[in-house]
Image (cartoon, rainbow, N blue to C red):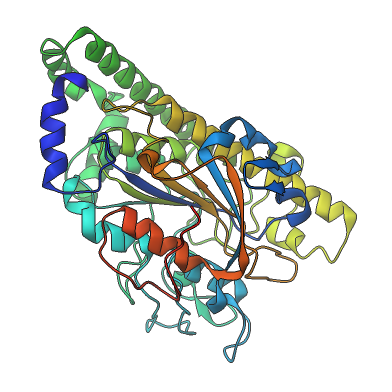
Length: 430
């Protein structure tokens, strides 16, 4: 808020990467599974002069905030002496650049992910070092893909070589974490109490908000009112979803019916949670796993009742390819929604959340039919506070390590390192 800007700038100096205007710099990752139909996804043209592919068309309105990359690879995703398991390796390598140890036991080993390296550097500047979200099941043990532990496939974020950062699938629990207090058990008790009393969490803080409002200028009063209204609307949407009952057993591979209210509703609520976390400066680092690689999520809302993974092995079948194109378009619409929310929220120091962020929308496979780990679908949204030249399609040299991008993102977050994953150099074309 403008009224609190001196205080915010002082806090920024205490830690965390900031833009030239003094706004906090945020970093987010959103993961899409099972590859894409590249012929319909890949842009036509290069540089500023390009046209979106058919399944990326929903993103056209945000063209000036996007960089679309062609040529990234994760070499450690390919099959080697450890054989099959491309889906597990796709998830495991995408933010680490490291080959996972093939095991279905407890002796998992990977590497720290890019988001956690950044969180270690700037996490002390916010209430939460990072926020890990998922629209999928949560699994940290057992075997999932050709002898690989489920931990590799159901986690994007890794705090260390042996410790994944387990993501949260429940919008309600994310909401409570951001706006409640206490540990997991205390939040659960708070949730049950609110369910019994039918009392909004905002009622507990409204009195303080009103007192704070008296100290603010008119513009900030309007901003506070707009923010509280938005939070209440999200809480009402969560409550509406909960009327359908609890989600399916998280131990299942992929719930056919999705969460109550449908898969799209779940995806958008989790995106809203991420935006709220950035808007309140609760954290500046977040990951969102839309679905794990190998997921057989269905899309009945768009007329595709078939499992995504099953369709991805289309073997050239035109009917299956057409359904996959619908799924690619579905995910592009969700990302466009996310960008809408990020661009709508304005920073007091200038620009929008999107302007002052680095958001990577990506997958660990390009061609799901052949399990290819090169030519990966990667979009970087946001301008990093003016540091990035957006609005272009960048064709890299073939087989450029995606870790080169991560190294560049770490530099922007203030991390003093010249090594990450299998990076060969810091990406300059961004």
